[in-house]
Image 1: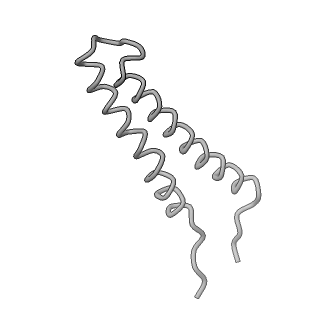
Image 2: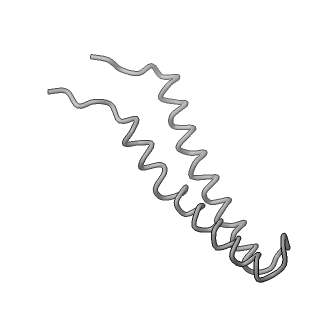
Image 3: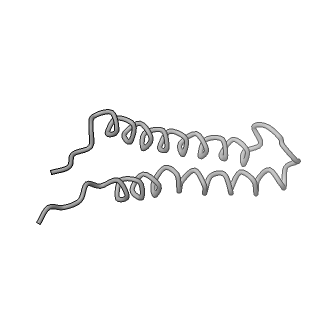
Length: 78
């Protein structure tokens, strides 16, 4: 039976946790851009940039950890 060592498991857990934290940060930054908290390229453009950042952040927060967990899942034994 092949079991990954503890250091690999810790690295993968850290990667999934970091992905969720970055996704949450992207969502917050996107909402700040949408509300006009700071300006990058002017208000109409900032809203579209903010919407794009929120969508990327939501994907990073909700979908990417599931993809990584499925990819790193240990094989089932028969």
